Length: 352
Image (cartoon, rainbow, N blue to C red):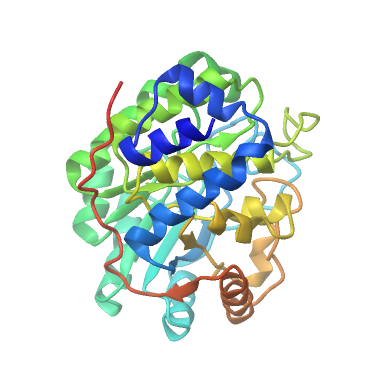
C-alpha cells in the first residue's frame, strides 16, 4: 500500500483500481499517507493556513435537496436574510480583524436578484479593493456569473456534490440535475473565476466508485479550491435517520486530494470540527490549508443549519478568529491573511 502512496506523491495520479484500494484500505496506511500529503503541502505553501471570512447571507433556498437543513421543504426553520448594511458591517468587522477574503454564502434565494447582488459586491469591492470576494450562492446562469464577476467577485464555490447522475438524483429533487451543475462549474472557469468544488463524504447511497468518479471529474475541471466534509444529518430532512459520514475517510480523501492537486486550496471545514473536537486540526495535518471563521451576526448563525449540531454558532467574530488561530497554531501551522494566495497549478493532473 505504501507503494501506491509513493506513486500518488510522485505522479499526482493513480489508476481507478489503485484509488479503490487506497480509499478502502484500513487505517494502518493513514499515518504514512498524511505524512506525504503534509510534506507536499509544505513544499508549496509552507506552514501557511489561509483565512476566509464567512458571511452566511440567507437561509432561504428554492431547492429541496434531501440532505440539507435549509431546504425549502423544511417548514420548521426560522428564515432570515441579511441586508446589504448587515453584510457591509460584517466586512468591516472582518477587515478590522485582518481578513482579506470575504465569502458570501447562502441558499438559492430569489430575493437576492442579480442587480442586488451586484450592488452588494460592488460596494464591498469599492470599500475594500485589497480584498478578494468569493461567492457561494448555488447554480446560476452564465449571465449572472458574468455580472457578479464584472461587479468585482473573483472566486466562486460550488460543490459538485456528486458527479454521478444516478447518485445525484437520489440526493436532489427532480428539478435539479448533475449535468447543469457541472455546466455551471465550467461556465465559471470560462469567465475567469477561481473555482472551488467538492463533495460530501459518506452521503447516502455513495459508493467508492462514486468517489473515484468525483475525483476524475475534478481532474477535468482542475479547480483552484476543493472543499470536502463528512455528510452530517439534519433532523428535518428525509435523510434524518441516515448514518453520518466518516471522519477517517474524509481525512484520507483530503490527503489524496492534496497529492492529486498539489496547488489546491483545501479547507479544513466546520463539518470536520462538528464530527470531532479535533477534526479541523486533523484536517490540517492531512493536507488542508484553509480555515473559514464565521463573520455572520451571532443571532443568525444557528439558523444557517445545513446539518445538526453545527459548531461556533455562539461565538462573536473576534472569538471565532482567536479560537481558530489557536487551533491552527496547536496543529503546527500559522495563520496568514494574504489575498493573492490562490496559485493556478503548473502541475496539470492526469485525466483518465
